[in-house]
Length: 96
Image 1 (tube, rainbow, N blue to C red):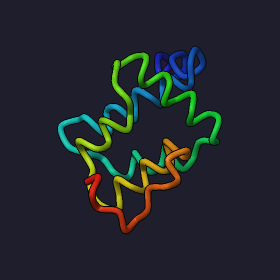
Image 2 (image 1 turned 180 degrees about the vertical axis):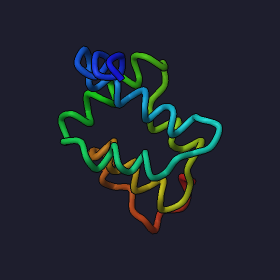
Image 3 (image 1 turned 135 degrees about the horizontal axis):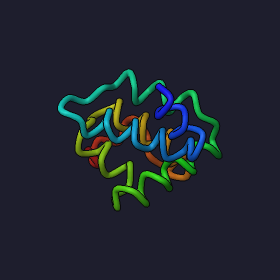
Image 4 (image 1 turned 135 degrees about the vertical axis):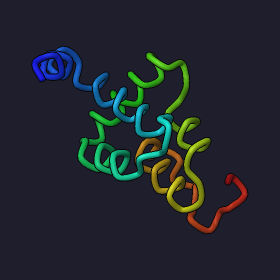
């Protein structure tokens, strides 16, 4: 428990990036963890988490989400982590 607290205290964005990676790439996708982390963080914090994810895993979180998730669920998650892609609509199924 102490190790976990120290890890969070050192770099909270890296901690959440690692948790997201575990939820996305783990043995089985964990949608509830992905949603919990993405909707509970502020927009600025989420941007920093995505940057830490990319720095640690040398991959965009959007790339990993696309490989694991699909359909409306993927499009929703993509909008949360990449709000500048506002042109992506829920009717657009060409990307999936």
